[in-house]
Length: 208
Image (cartoon, rainbow, N blue to C red; front, side, top):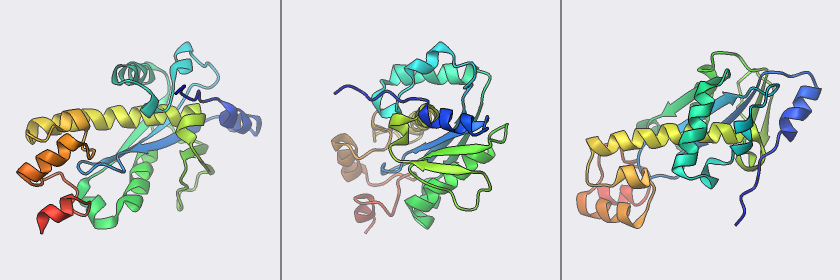
């Protein structure tokens, strides 16, 4: 399947309206059985548009090495980015949807420069006094949101590799907490570890 190439259409529409500091916002980690949900907010250099921006895709359409390379480009560029992370405990307490919105809020709050518009993958964030738009399939069609998806994905993957050293035997470095056959087998064999989401099946069933 040919990957969809995101464009600057949403950003150009906003620039034409006078907006300049446009942040793309996305999250990763809604579905895993273990670990946090992580969101990122990224303000790209839209006026300069360096050549590496042509490589930006939805993080799910890139290989790990491609994500790492683009992540490094984002970190080295003269742009603003913020990351928000919400733990498995909060996910269990509040639910995954509220935890996802909370992670996005944290990511926006951690931006060194306040954006004047937010392009968010699918969601809207009530209570944030910044103009915003929820873009359906935003990580596939909007460059700023796709860039945020890469930052969030690389950040969370690196965290799960660290967790693998603390909780060996589950294969967290490989599957990053998602419910792969290998993960489910380890869960059956070892039971949940401290970073498993206790309200998610089949983890919850193993706690009974």
